[in-house]
Amino acid sequence: MSLLTPLQTWTSLDTWIIVIGALAAMACALPGCFLLLRRQSLMGDAISHTSLLGIVAAFFVSHWLVEAHVISPATELSLRHVAMCLGAVIVGVLSAWMTESLQKFGNVESSAALGVVFTSLFALGLLLIRAVADDVHIDPDCVLYGAIEMAPLETIGASGVPRAVVVNGVVLAINVLLTVLLFKELRLSAFDPALATTQGISAQVMHYGLMGVTAMTLVAAFESVGSILVIAMLIIPPATAYLLTDRLPRMIGLSLLIGGLSSVLGHVSALTLPPLIARSVGISDVHDASTAGMMAAAAGFLFVTAMLLGPKYGLVSRAWHRLLLKLRIAGEDVLGGLYRFEESAPASADVSLATERAVWLRTLLTQTWLTRLASWVLLRRGWLIGSGADVHLTDTGREAARTLVRSHRLWESFLAKHFVLGTGRFHESAEQVEHFLDGELLAELDQDLDRPGVDPHGRAIPN
Image (cartoon, rainbow, N blue to C red; front, top):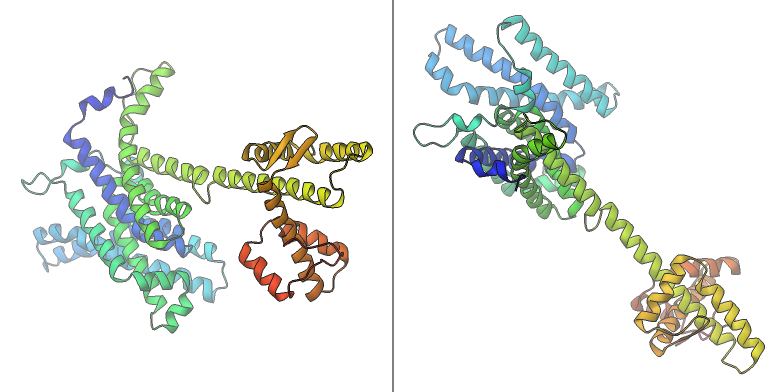
């Protein structure tokens, strides 16, 4: 209950904060997906800083137009955000062009070229502020973390809808529309620019268009959510979705979902976790944390979760699948060993032969912990029967072992027919390949070899 106590004072302001954060995150995630596929995610970080030059330039141009009596102050005020967005788009495209030109003509590595352009244009923007508008106050905390907690207070007329909701919602709608209309072009130019060009799609135009859309999205979101969250939502949701699927449409949908979920988890965590953690260390005057910072942290938490538990690329999932594969191979090795022993030394009442079998079987079944576990699994599945050194194949286990031995000997025969290798190399290769030959491939091998009866060593190939 102490964790949920801060949520008891939930108001419409909290709801609007989540909506603004979700809209900004989803708007950033759409171009972020294609930047990730192009391996240009850090270009978004660079554009978020170089756009400062475009914003400052647009502000100065609009101010000059007012001073020259070309437009009225009221008109300048109403068009200021559009002008700043347009300036940021122009500088964003300029940043991409300068980076490519520096890399192409200056023989500079791509990340180094990006670093030169990023720092130079950002420094130029700061220099203009210092030289021409030295009295302009820039709050570093506001630049870094944004003012998302205060964004709902600036509403449009009497509607009560925050301006940030409208701005980020419009940008999200534009990004969705462009993604739907140009999906084929964006996908093709991202995966194979050369093929896109041969298909009549200008990969260069798509590249600069993506840079412009990215700049527009970042500027629209920057005012309300700050630099940290803008960069986080441009990179982290697409990267998280990339770990969860190999399908681009699904990746885009997941990135939107992750962006929205990060907004919810971030704001709830900003209200609940800080006082709980502070009280646990004896601090009583901490009540909340930066919502934008916690949204970025929530996105990072979702990424780490996907990195660990993703169904295909998660570290835990991959380790689990590798363990299952090793367990299957160890079990098949046990089955194959038992089948070959039965084949070479059929059941007999000879005491010495029975003793030899017991020693051999004990060695086979207790080689490693993985072999012991595989033997236990085979007993549970009913492929082996017995206990200790008195273990035998059941009918089901013998059928599986026969298939494995058939795979081994067919592959040895195939290598002997088509390759000039030593006999030992046949066996070494077949020991690995035998675990991965399916029925269809076995039939093709059998047909290619004219259904051989024996392998290169003269041993019978099971039917």
